[in-house]
Amino acid sequence: MSQVTLQASTSRLKGSSNSRRLRSSGSIPGVVYGPGVSPLPISVDAKSFRTAVSGEQGLNSMIELEADGKKFLVMAREIQRHPVRGTVSHIDFQVVDPNSTVIAEVPLHLVGDAVEVRHADWEVDQQMFSIELKTRPDKIPTHIDVDISALKPGDAIRIADVVLPEGVEPAGDHALSVVTTRQGRIAKPAGGPESTAV
Image 1 (cartoon, rainbow, N blue to C red):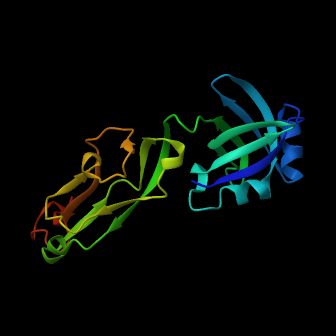
Image 2 (cartoon, helix red, strand yellow):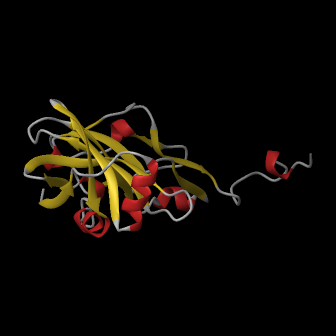
């Protein structure tokens, strides 16, 4: 996994008015935390942060945060956004050990063609669009492909069925459905529940 460097300042003052001033000047308030690290208030340049997480790893990028002479290996965790504009208003940076496992959320991509489902006029219903994985920071995949080619009407693909890279395992309930199948409108019998007047 590539690693990017991000400059930070530890001179920011606490308080909502000070945070607003930071944001208006193009900076984002944040905090660094982790094992053996007391919560450290910081600020980072908004444009530099966007650049740091613009690679294929996105928010799972490993960042070397340089804060007034101190260096921290971190990942951006809790991201708060403005409710209307959607701009980042606060960032929690978690200090990570490159040799220890972390939990990361990774996108799920459906691949293949569920031919039997389609020919039966059924539909593929994606239940999950991301998955939480447990692995070392340098092994976090950019995404996970879920092959739906072998699906048949009535089948489902659960987290336990998803093929993951070596050294990567699910962090959540293995029984949750990632993909299910359902009858399409054409396949539903006439006079069924959907066509019954209420």
